Image (cartoon, helix red, strand yellow):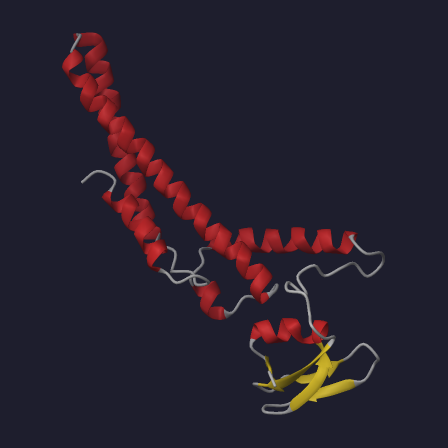
Amino acid sequence: MFCEKAMELIRELHRAPEGQLPAFNEDGLRQVLEEMKALYEQNQSDVNEAKSGGRSDLIPTIKFRHCSLLRNRRCTVAYLYDRLLRIRAFRWEYGSILPNALRFHMSAEEMEWFNNYKRSLATYMRSLGGDEGLDITQDVKPPKSLYIEVRCLKDYGEFEVDDGTSVLLKKNSQHFLPRWKCEQLIRQGVLEHILS
């Protein structure tokens, strides 16, 4: 059936929960592209036959195939664009290092795009705020206090705070740390914010 495989790509993304990325469906995308190639070749032969043989009865079929080509293209672009939007959101949510579960579901081209986006964002952040730059990924929500209590979920090792002191982050240890220093570790699953 026309455009069925392209619609399945869209349904696959729609079924995935927000904040998750389904595995890149290279096989489904290849099938859509093969269908588009077959439709294009059929249209080309019918257009040549309609022009040379004066067969105007082929025009509705040509238009139908052309509409199917356009729909397949729209679905394919929507599939790829939605995946890129999700990957871009992951950079803001998880930081510059993605969890293995997410990287596993990305294609090589998507990983390359993520790395280029990460580099561009880092370059932009270095250009802000003087010598040290400004990390705009911190404090996505305005903080209520500058320090928070956190629990370490796994062994991390030494962690240096602004004043030069270092804290040993061991599993199940609790600490009172500056929010902006540990927000990235909270996103990575190393620390857990303790709400009292």
